[in-house]
Amino acid sequence: MRGHESEVSSCALSADGRTALSISRDHLIIWDIEGGREGGHVRGHGLEVRSCAVSTDERIGLSGSDDRELIAWDLVTGEQRHRLLGHAGRVLGCGISGDGSTGLSASADESLIVWDLATGEQHHRLSGHRDVVWSCGISANGSTGLSASRDKTLIVWDLRSRRQRHRLHDHDIMISCCAISADGRTGLSGSGDWVLIAWDLETGEERHRLLGHDGWISSCAIDADGRNGLSASHDQTLIVWDLATGQQRHRLLGHDGQVLGCAISADGRTGLSASNDRTLMLWDLTTGEAVSRLALDSIAVGVALSPTRVALVGDHKGNVTCFEIVVP
Image (tube, rainbow, N blue to C red; front, side, top):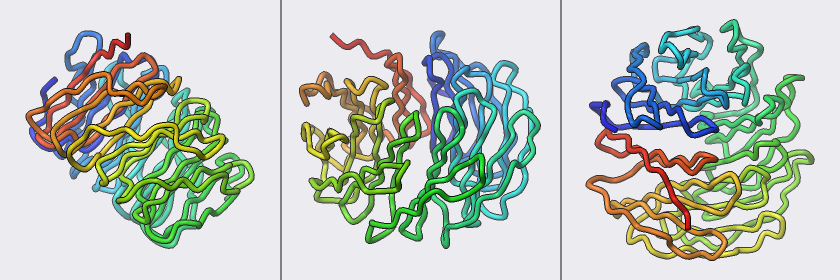
């Protein structure tokens, strides 16, 4: 699937794996995954688009940009529904609830904003971080948010009461990635301190400190029920984690370069990884064995894996490729 003319920085996939949204410096594209074709180019941001998200019913999309704006998109028509104004800095992350009614955005202005995507109005602004907010996530029902910042903390948010539930600060340096389970009960964070932490987001307590990587942790993911975690590192390995016990299930060996991205299927049985060795690898996470290895012409930057095991991969040349994964 080709359509962008510059590096693809992020992509998102609907829960049923049929509709995708890809973004780059030049524009945003809606993709029809089943047909392998573009559903439409949508242009609207003035500067680089940093993040995007798709609702479960694949009708609503959300994109955030260096132009300090978000746009809510009608993915059926490709038209803008609302232009969301409110941040005073670059919009670096965004998320959307399962039904597409609520959006969450993270910004270099050190704040998050909760959005009513039906009207395009702000619900409220969330302040609490003391530095750039790099990323955010939202539970499927839109009640819980998680944000990660350069200030070395995560914050668990009650998005309905507008209050912080917990401030999590056990990492020693900047948090590089975070993930939240669909039910909002489990969180996972990774940092340049080579440590991952599994969190109980209801109590704010650290469940387990996950040690095993020997390099910067670049990406992490959680399956739907929060039982299984997957982490990717610059040490050229991935680790499958039992988040209930904090133990390693498997260390995945096979890449010859830094592992830049990872994704996990909803049932926790399948993993996908991308490396600067110009390969993608598909993994059976129940055994820790590699299922297949795909050589690429370029370096894959971001990977996503839908519940139906459709994979979407963006590379540094601006190409977006869709794979249908068949697991024996």
